Length: 272
Length: 255
Image (cartoon, helix red, strand yellow):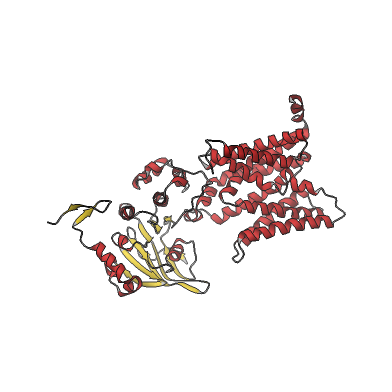
């Protein structure tokens, strides 16, 4: 068992997978915390679902798949932000319509183009073990970029989250910050697709912060502990998937949920 | 629409402010000005446009027409009517006040001491009671040493004894720090004693002036009825005794 573990974690593709997964988990901690604090999880879900349409269009037009995913996520993020300001239809109805119609459109478009053979399951549930070195580079670069932006705007983002109007009066440009946050979520969604897939991305963003809530006294503690819990889920999920021969993405999410449940019911941990 | 005040010393002055929402006029020809150290109180029934006016003065909302002059580099401290405390975010009072951009611990402690809530410093925001939260919000508004304080129903959720104390505190802050105050209030009789100017608003300005003047104005009596004005009369009568918190007379000076 120990030997096969050593063998597992010295294989190139497993190391790539591990590096990509942990990079993602590290930024998902703080970013996911904002999603929890601002109650935006449905927003992240919609963004992830609409990304499938982006993939389909990217494949049809023969574009670089990484780039087409990123562009479509950013496009939908801006579109959703603009639509949210419209009165008449409630936000959650609107998000529900867009999430499912774009997911359905993505599947239909992919199925229509018989020239392309794609593994739909890889996009829906992730294919972490097939990650290439260039894809890994994308994930690391984007994670580093997101960390930098979060670091620079951390206090302003917190202030705008706690009370937007007070922040505005104190000189913070709240609208700009909201846009920055939405674009960062779009970026993280676009790189997580390969790791956990369209259907499970939001869980990787919200489960670790929710698990960390009871262990934290400050927003920073919650963000950092969420990053640790996320990384632990990646390692556990990957290992379990290897030994039980199950898909990696779902195994990671199951691991994260197990940690959440354990912390939630552990006596002495403050409940959310 | 915004520029420096042309000649006078006002921190902020507005004139001919009009605002409608969906064709319904909410504010009509409003004029307003606040001097340093002056306390101006907006009163009026629900839907009178008080919060709308405050949001226009703050710059959070655009008026349909009118002019606002704001003193150059005027720092405004704003206390909103309510704050939804997000229980999923662990945040203590100290950190909440630091979010104002003022990180210096001594300044934070000084402000907390001034408002008699130093003991709340390390308390989680979600565990602070409604009345205490109002003081925490007032502390946040004071963090950046504002020249003008704008308070939207500062005493909301505070018990009766606490309300009088809070208004006394606001009046003390205004005079010691020389800042102007614009506040909205429903607590007519409490606020009368702690304000220099009252503006009685019901879409338009019904009447304005010194509290004693306004409380006898026919427009005011129309708006609030004679009972409300009697409440004020009761309040402004010369007290010949003092009450303790339970209402028992503790001190009599009938000499």
